[in-house]
Amino acid sequence: MTSGLSFSDCEVPAENALPGVVGLRVPLSCLTQARYGIGWGVIGAATACYDTALQYAKSRKQFAIVEDYSVMRHMNNLESVYTYEGAHDIQRLIIGERITGVSACV
Image (cartoon, rainbow, N blue to C red; front, top):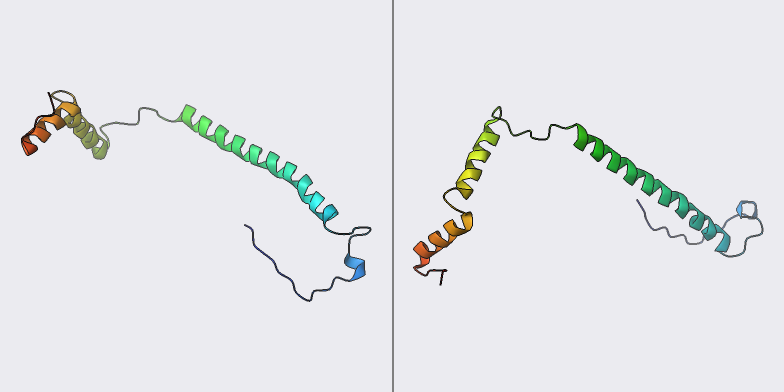
């Protein structure tokens, strides 16, 4: 999470200043170096996510549609209605013609 900070009338005692530093060049160079670590951290997190997904894909039951769950049985039956008696595209053409009276076939 990031946020903006604004300081007004803020004095930093001399003993709290970075020694030999004028301007923001040195403090900002620290951020440049930190970006390398952040980049490697992101790559590590992405690799961990990929590996977790890969391990799950290799170990899961892949063909989990069984009659034990009525929702899946109904879904399979509805899918067959979608495609039976010819391609569903043909069914749509027939229904469209019946509704509009205009054939889509030339």
